[in-house]
Image (cartoon, rainbow, N blue to C red; front, side, top):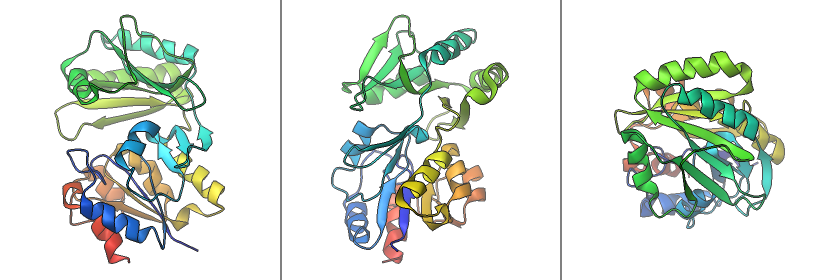
Length: 273
């Protein structure tokens, strides 16, 4: 049976300027003739397609931190949603801390997405929005509320705001949700991602294994951040890039000597050709 490789995108496979190098593209497509390659990312379907349009993907993709599993040709395999009532309750609790989230949601079952953002944003949120200026999914909201099919809610702020917010949300909603608090590696900000309790990469990895009729031990996975840790626990081989967070390196079976900007994943794949 062919080996299976799943890689995170941002800060792992993509370069910091959010591109795929010609070298990584070449090695990926060479490896795809003898292995199943795909991605496990916080990115949406449309953004992932844009980044990977020149790459051969032969296995389902884990998208939006694990809340969606879909094939490259848009066959939906699994979807884990936060409903509107719960989404609105999260927003209301966050307002007690003076912050509103970004909301990534589906507008329909054709996987058309919406990216809702509040009119009043902090410096960290504004920096994120700068990267999405021409994104057709963007919708500014004077009074932001959840949609019917919410994939994730994301807060960006300083740690001193998000750490107590995370604690408060855990106390309020408990096991109804998944909470991932992590530093934004290239700034002094942090982000808190709120998901369905089974909408993470670990559960999504199991979903792909079941879909392919394989075991999770058959997977080699690459990552750099907190949202990769569950996937690291389940995969047969977990690989961290050099620029990964220390917590991720500690969980990894292999720590690569190269960063995402040095084509770390592609160089590893080349060594296995």
